[in-house]
Every structure is written in C-alpha cells, then in structure tokens.
Figure 1 (cartoon, chains in turn blue, purple, brown):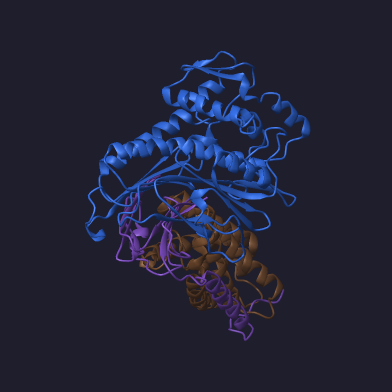
Figure 2 (cartoon, one colour; figure 1 turned 120 degrees about the vertical axis):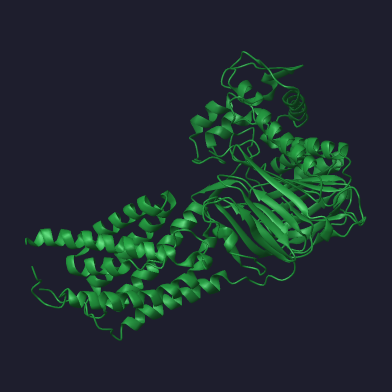
Length: 338
Length: 127
Length: 174
C-alpha cells in the first residue's frame, strides 16, 4: 500500500560540507544511510559525523511515525480512528495541526487538511486509483471541513463522524524544518537537505556561493529542469500535477484536490514552486497557489510578497518575488514571461 | 506421419539468427545514452523508484536498506556496490561503473545503480 | 514397452538431463558478466527441444515446468523460479509456434536460437517486473548475442541426439 502522508518522504540529506571548512573534498567522504520505514525512504548523507546523521534519521522516522495518516498507531492515525471522541496527540502533531488549521483558515478552506475522505475515495496515490461517482464524491464531501476539527492544547477532536485529516501536504516541510533545527544545533552551518522533491538549503556552499537549484521540468524526467535559481538559507518546494497522478481515458487526475468540488485540481498550471524560510509554510503556499491557478495565484503572491514560480500547461513560466528575481531559463521549450 | 523439422541447418535459419541479432542491436541502440554530456550522476533506484541521485564527482558512500543491505560507493568518478550481504553478491561483482548508461543490479534487494547524465551544473533539482 | 510408458520414461530422463545441465551452467561464472542471479544461457534447452520434437508440446511444457520447479527446489529460490518459469515457458512457446508454422522452412537450429533468445527475454521480463524497472533490459543485447551462439550449440547437440533417437524415422522405436 502506498501511503499518502509523505510517500515522497524519501529523505535525502546531503550535507554540503562539514562545519570545519577548508579540507579538500577527497579527505571527507560523504556518509549516507537510508532507512526504509513504512514504504518511505529516509536517507541521510553527510561528509562527516555519522552520529548527526543517525540523529536526523531517527528524527525523521519518529516524525513519520507520529504524522502518518496510514499508520494506525500514529497520532494522526489515532485521531482519524477516534470518530468524535477526540484524542490526546503528541507535541509535534499538536503543533503541526494548529499550524495547519491556521493555514486552512487563511486560505478560506482552499487548503484543507480534512479533505482526506475525498482523497481516500479517489486513492490517487494508492494501488487502485479510480474516478468515483458524483454521489460518492458528494457523500465524502459531507465529511470535509477544517472548521469541524478542533485542536485545544494537545486535544484534537472531530465534530462529525466520518471525518479524517491528512497532514501529508505539509509534513515534509515540517520535517525539514525540524531536521534543519537539529543540524544547526549540532553545529552544521552548511547543508543541503532533500526531502522528497523539496529541498532545504542551510547556509551557503562552503566556498561562500549560493546553491544552484534546478526547477524540475514537469514534462521531463527526474533529472531535467526548466531553469535554475540561486538559493541560500531557504526552503524550496513544488506542487504540481506531474508527480503523482493517474490517467483514465486520456484525462489526468492529480493528487491535489479542489476542496470545493471534491475533484482533482485541473487548471492552467502544471506546477508551482515557492521559496520560503519555513518548510511547512512553503508546502502550504505551493499547494494553495497550485489550487488557485495562474491569475489568482500571481495576485496572491503580490499581495503577500511570496516568491513563486508558475509553470503553465502551455509551457509559459511566470516568476514573482525577490527569490526568483534571478531565475535563469535553461530549457528552450519554455517561455519566461517577465 | 507429418513432415518433420530438419535436423540439418537451413538457409532460412539465418533469418532467425539475423532477427535475434537485430533485436540485440535495437535494444542496444535504445539504451545508448542520449547526448548525455556534462555531469554524471549515480542514480540509485529501489523497486523502480529513484531514491538517490549522487554526482559522480563527489566521493560518497550510500547505504540502501531493505531485505538486504547494499553499500554503494562513489569514488574517483566511478560508482559501484562496494559491499552487500545479499546471497550471491552479484551486485558487488559487477564492478565499477563510470559511463552513462552503465548498470549494476542487486536483484534480491530490488536495487539498481545506473549512471545517468545530468544536464548541467546544478546542486539539486527541486519539484 | 508401451508407447506411453516409454514417453514418460524418456521425459523423466530428459528432466534429469535438464537439471544436470542447469547445474553445470550454475557452476559457470556467468554471473560475473550478467549480475542477475538466475539468468542463464539455457543449455537445458537441448533436452527440452528433444522432448518438443519427439513428443509434442504437451510433454514439452510438462518437462519445462518440472525442470523449473525441481531446479528451484534443488538450487534456487522463489526468485529464480519466477525467472526460469517465465524464461522456460516463453522459450518453449516460441519454439513450439515456430515448429508449428515454419516446419518446412526452418531447421532445429533456427528454432533453438529463437528459443534461447526468448528464454533470455523472458528472464529479463521477470527481472524487470521484480525490479519495477525496465533498465535490466540493457543486458539484453549481450544476452541475446550470447543466446544466439548457445542456441546454435544446443541445436547441434540436439540435432545429434534426435538423430540417435531416430527422430527422422517415420516409425518411432518402441
């Protein structure tokens, strides 16, 4: 069974350098380890400090175990099984739940963590995705509404039977934030932390330059990109229709849902990439902007000063915000609208 | 009795042989790396899913867990399975990979190590 | 001896021959070239070809299945069973269809080469399903070329064997 929460939580941690600086790269071989837990690859790489890696690995496995919707004994799993009884969740789940509910409210419900009954019905990321009947969708939609999930301290509670929530949309970013905090506390000043397709770039490269990050080409393979952007000390993440989807009758159904209709998002966008300081917020914003579509998304970015890059289905790229000011287009199939 | 298959080589057998070799050639061409210049990466996949893409110019060691444990080492521009606790250690015996398109496999662990070309000089790809 | 009994005896014998050939192949350091356990050249095709031509597809498929099951039991694993079954059945099907349609045009050599190559295609298909990746097919050029050569060698041996068993004669010894 593919899991929904962070099935992309293939965590690749690449420490660009150890804290100690100027040694030739040949002397410090990068150490990497992967842990396979719950259908998830958790990967840690560093040029030194096996212990730090182990700690990061443990942190990631631990978070996955607390925040996974598909694991029955996780905080979220227990919450989803609790009906209207309510459960006491751990600090991580409580923090992230209240942060997530804040985002739900801010987006006016366009971003909604209680969409889980609908995603489960479609099962886009599972083994047997299908297009449900309008009646089934309407039924599932009755159980959606972030306002009916309350978190008070560590007490989380649904107001109605049949509700469930999924933090998969922002758990990756939260995990990245936590890992970066840990790295910093271990004295690492320069690191590249890859969580699935999202990356936290801690500090700058050992030579003092910014990281050069490619933006994935939604129509190409995993190694192709449309252009590059220089990043220091930021989190970059994308939401799009190209990574997890299924097709029926030539129509593509992606894993991000329109919370008003209960159908997968299908607008003029292929993907949205945002650069933020905060991982969970980055994940939220990329999802929200993808749901909004190009025009409303751009407006929202201007309004809130968000740095984002939009790739439309007709191969136009729109950038906004200071972090994308120096975006460099490298793929001639695309047009960069300025 | 019906007619029987000849035990002596016939000219038309060459058609089968040619077809076999053509198949080999076609598949060879298909897997020929396409315009992959620039930086090379070691792409590690497990059960068909890419789990890591490591640049060949940066020495590294990568441990893949699963039913078995494989260690992939990247050193001096080559990538290889440096150790494994799988039954035959065929993956280790494959040796060092240095060119785009080369492949090493640990079947018991479902892991493939493949050399792929990157498009340019980026530190990572987001999205 | 009754005809059926003789067929059964020969088939049993051929299964044993398959297993021995499979074991001999197992000893070759072939995995150094193709690092996929269970990928083989298919020397046991000699015996399978003999059974197919002497007794027809029903017996041939039976021996193929027996050989695959027994060799997995004796020296293999579940994975190698998947390999040899897919390879063996695909090879047998290719050879059977060729003997069915081009009996007058081809000889045992062409049929054997086709069998050997399809044997490899089948094994790689099984491997690619297990790995979830078609990348293993990049071994096919090497395997198919090697398969062509072994196919010719096994055909030569099978040809001689069939001759000795009186395949060309209209009345089969009984």
